[in-house]
Length: 291
Figure 1 (tube, rainbow, N blue to C red):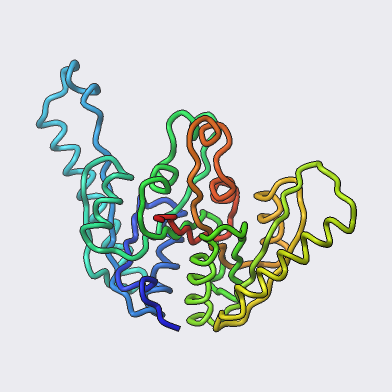
Figure 2 (cartoon, rainbow, N blue to C red):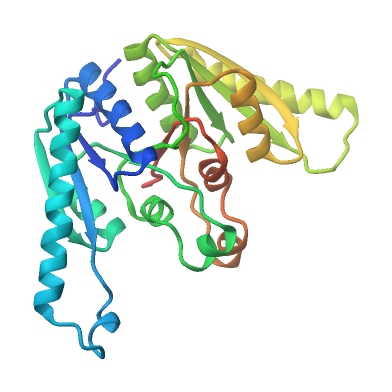
């Protein structure tokens, strides 16, 4: 199958030296090995907001001194990492700015095909009012993000889980999973959750719905040139059911697409994808819906 538009020629690894971001490096190196990719390492030095020093007696020389101190420390940590893991980055970038903006800008400039980054859990109030770097990047990035938690896992991809909701974007999700499954000799594990909340329906109606969904998934998977299977389950909450299914079936990766939502519904509830990203300890390949 052609990989056109789904190649991983250039990988951007963005790190803040947290445990999660260091775990994401191992995955980035795994992809580099399999896809013969270039890898660019990026560390963003957060800039202080102007209000922090405009009205306070902070000398600009002190700011410059602190910037160089932080930069030198980052360089030493990256050099130590290179020696310890016996790796070589094709390029190393240390840049000051707003983290998610710099990552997005560097990804565009370096023509990156994917960004590897660690994800952190944030209290709900903080996520709603401020937003984490990952959350902001999810809403701005035009290329896939590979998100890794701080929980250490063996790097293998026997089972690639693809939750789908039968929207057109599922074609892209399955295509990405197929490319990876062929490279890693994995199973494309497609899951559709019938989110019925607490509604109850007669058995014959549910059977009819399942039959129609099965027919659609059969058609979609016929052209997949990789080992594949699908399951249909019903649940009150799609995100919780997907996470539980991934744990039970020992999925090694979850392939998700972002789904655009707007207004108060997005602010208060977020999408199923965002809930999975926030809760899952399983690595996630998040594909932007650019259509």
